[in-house]
Image: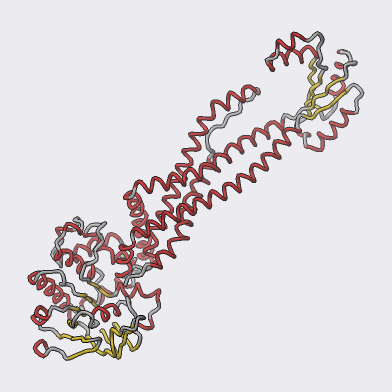
Length: 225
Length: 326
C-alpha cells in the first residue's frame, strides 16, 4: 500500500532528511514510525500526501507513483489519504460538525444531505456525536484530536497517516487514541503513525520502523507481531 | 479482508456517481457556498459595509449622470418635435401686411400653423415673463417687432426640410430675420453627445476603481484566512475549491454595491425632483426626473455582481496559489 524505494530527500540548505530509505507497509497493516526528532519521521509522512517531494527514489501509494502526479492532481491524492496532525489543525471559526464535513465538501462528490449522515457516523465512531455543534475551542486536547481523526476518516480513506497524534496528550488519552487507530486498521485501513513515544507504541504490538539520520535502523524485536 | 470486500460495492458507487447526481451535487454545493460566503461577509460587518459603501458610491456616480442625461436627452427630443421658426417682421410692415403674410404662409403645404404676435402682445409677454415690468413701463415706445411663429408640419420636420423652409421664409421681403428655434436644441444634442461620451469614460474609470476595491477587499480576506486555507489545502482542497467562496463574496459585494447605488441614485433623484420641477415650471415645462428606469436598474444589478466576480477572480487565483501548506 505504501512503498518507499531508495528514497532520499535533500533540502535546499543541504540538509539530508532521508538517505536511501526503503520500506513497505502492506494493505491493512498498522505500522509505527519512530526515531528522535530530526530523524526524518515527519519528512516521510509529508511525502505521502505530497507536502514534500523526494529528491531521489520512488514512492508508490496504492499503486500510484507519486513523482508522476501533477500539481493539479495533488488535491485529489490528499483527499484519498486521511491525515492527522499533532495539533489537530481544526478550523476554529466553525463547529465540530462543519470541521468533520470539510473533506466531503472538498471532493464535490457528495450531496449536502448525504454529508450529514456520514459526518455523524464518523463522530459517532470517535465518541463525539454529542459535541457536533460545539466550537473546537470548547473541546479538550483529546477531544480535539478525536475530531481530527473523525475528519481524517469521514471520506473513508484507504490510508491513514498520523504525525505524533498523541504528542500533546497524557498517557491514558494517548492509549485511547491508539486504540481508535487500531479499530480503523481492523476494518481494513492502512495506518502509518509517527511517534517517539516508544513505551506507548511497543504496547500496541505492531511493526515499528525506526529512523536514525534519515535511514532505517533495526525493527524492534519485541514488537514484531 | 471480508470487511474490505463488503465495502467495495459501496465505495464503487460513491466514487462514480451518475451525471445527474453529480450535477445535482454541483448545484447543491454551489448553493451551499453561495449562502456560506454570505454568512462569511456577515462575520466582518464593518469591512463589508465599508467596501459596499465605496462600491455603491462608485457605481452611483456614473449611474446618476447617465440617468440625468437620458432625461435631458428625452426632453431635447420632445423639443425637437415642437420645432418652430420665429419670423421677426420689419417695422415698416403694418398689422394688415403681417396678417396677410400669415394667411399666405398658412396655406403652404409644409406648414401646420402660423401664429401672429403683435408688438403689443410681445411687450406684454416680456413684461410678465422677465419681471422687468418697471423697466418696460419706462420705455416711451415699444422696441419689439411683430412676430410670426411658424409651425412646420411634424412629418416634414427633418433637418433638411426645415433648412429649405427657413431660406424660403428668409427670402420674403417682409421678414427682417427668421430664426429657427431648433438651433439651440441641436447644440444641446451636441453637448449631450459629448456628455454621454464623458459618462462612458467616467463610468469606465469608476468601474476600474470598483474592480480594484473588490480585488483588494478579497485579497485582504484571503490573507486573513491564510491559516484556514492552508488547512483546507492540507486535507485536499483544490485551488478552485478554496477560491469559490471568495468569488461568491465578490459577487455579493458587487450586488450589494449595485443595490446601494440604486438606492442612492433614487434618493438623489427624489431630492432633486422638487427643485427640478420648479425650474422646469419656470420654462413652462412639466419636465421631471422620476426614478431610475427598469433598464438602468437591470444594468446596475448585473454590472455590480459582474464587476465583483471579475475583481475577485483577478486576485483570488494568484493569492490562493501562493498559499501552500508545508
